[in-house]
View 1 (cartoon, rainbow, N blue to C red):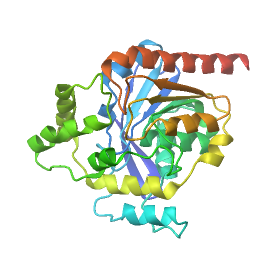
View 2 (tube, rainbow, N blue to C red):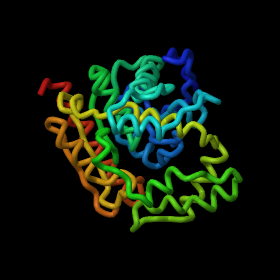
View 3 (cartoon, rainbow, N blue to C red):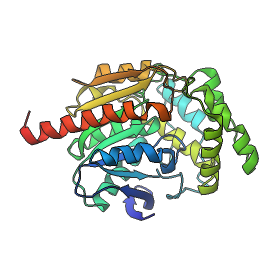
View 4 (cartoon, one colour):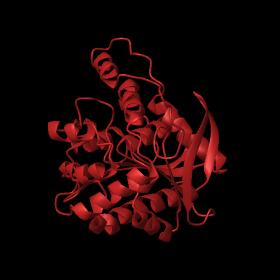
Length: 303
């Protein structure tokens, strides 16, 4: 896969990315979530969007996958969270969601793209929201997928989901794979597939096992605060999608996002959790495609 070497707040950052489809088609930038690699976007999901006429770009955020890692940079996300809750001065963090959003903008620059549809999932949705707030001219539309607004009291994970996410990961390959079904706590209950979950865990481990980066990404989330004011000012066509089964970032976070963004659409999906289950892909990509094509028509006609 190609790499983009970009200038960032920490110096030079290398972003690993992949493009699918025709570069002459409207671009769609996919931004993954906390600790998630570009391969966590299902291949079929990406191909379905390519088949609908989009130029799909997926990439690894910094501190994840094959992009730049800040080895040895220590941060205490719990201290950042505690300071943010009490409005105290925040400890220094290596980067914020604004920096991660800037990485995405620099990737668009690297590819020679003036704008793209911006789709972010989970933490990626937070990055996507930040990108569109801070760089509205770069967004043809926004899709916020099972994400939240940065208000800690809304869309907070259940205790069981938080424990599964933040607990230590086994460092042995087979133990890591065997432990992966614990993530079923936030996934779509109706469509949970343990074999598929373990297969994905093996792919993730073999490509890049890097739990150290998660503490820095988590600190970035906590340090970045609420996006309420920015979301209220958005004029970008916005679709918010959330699953009813989501216990990691429950659906009240998605509902709140849609309430804040003027003219946005909220799609609450039955039998969907904090994942993209195979049987729901036609429905989900159909909704996304309709949203993006309407945004394209509005741009072309001035409506």
